[in-house]
Amino acid sequence: MGAEGITKALEEGANLVITGRVSDPALTIGPLVHEFGWNIDDNPDQMGQAVLAGHLLECAGQVTGGYFADPGYKDVPDLWKLGFPLIEIDGTGAFTVTKVEGSGGLVSVDTCKEQMIYEIHNPKAYLTPDATADFSKVTFRQIGENQVRAEHATTHGRPETLKVSVGYKDCFIGEGEISYGGSNCVARAELAAEILEKRIELTGIELEEYRTDFIGCNSLYRDAISKEIGSGTLCEVRLRAAGRTKDRKNAVLLANEVEALYTNGPAGGGGAVKRVSEIVSVCSIFVPRDAVEAKVTFREV
Image (tube, rainbow, N blue to C red; front, side):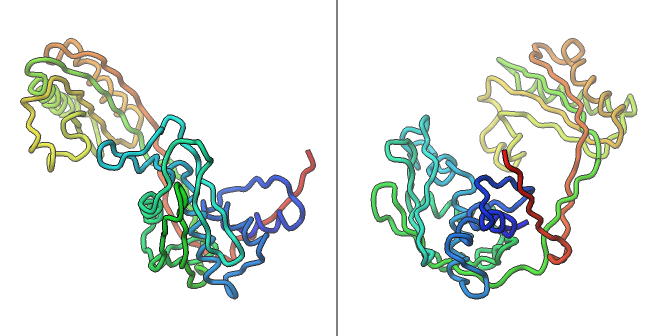
């Protein structure tokens, strides 16, 4: 859902608005539409700025340096007292991104640029329920310490559909982890992974998908980058084995096999854990926007 219900609630005097699942920018768009009377047909540039403002605010401390920080490369001061962002906006739609004075973090052109391109599929056509935003000509200017001016976002009408996320019971995942440390730890972890593969085949555990990770060695990038680092220098590694299956029974059997490595596997395994999770997956579909109506109810508390 978009900002329609939020705007309607504010227009009718609500002090606090509690919504269902609305888009992140809608939380900002609603108050701006209420305050300035903007609409997508008459104010495409202002609505573009409204979407941009909401998009920059949506992850809070991310735009003030939280997700930006990379020590020695992109340093951010005092992250331990990170300040959340503030936006000062006027009727033209142009706005300034800043934060609470004295708080930690950083508001810069680069923090704003990184947040602007975060989680958008097409900078020229960023789909939100309220507007198809175009960020391709956005400019950011540093106008003071922790003050960035943002301008030139626009929109290209509203999407004809709304996105619906449908949750459904999909599968079970059985997984386990165990650590190996000290001399020859990687070889012992690799032997443990080989044992698991043989045990799965021997006991007839039925899995739709299976993978092992050597955490600290190849779990993030698989072998593409990890092989360049070399396993000989590692002094600890954690083996993770996980399998996806349609029933709980096989997920439990897999998790049990990892735990059994404690005494049945290579020497020195420790910190074994196992878990079985039922997975609710999400399928995204689109529905005509006129199939959904925003309804507002009021309650005095």
